[in-house]
Image (cartoon, rainbow, N blue to C red; front, side):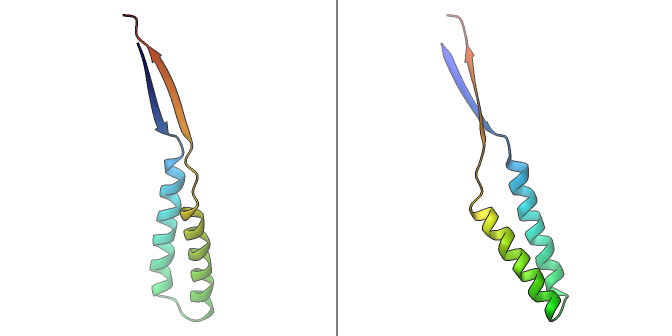
Length: 66
């Protein structure tokens, strides 16, 4: 009998993107003018990367003798 297991190997990359978005949004709340616009552009870029994130799967096949 064979079992196939899969796991996402790059989930930490997505978590980092989301954490960066959160931190930049917190900084943007306390900034003004040009700095805010720069931060918002960076947030937009990271949000786009997050929305188009490609998960990488690792598959393993385990064979168990009957």
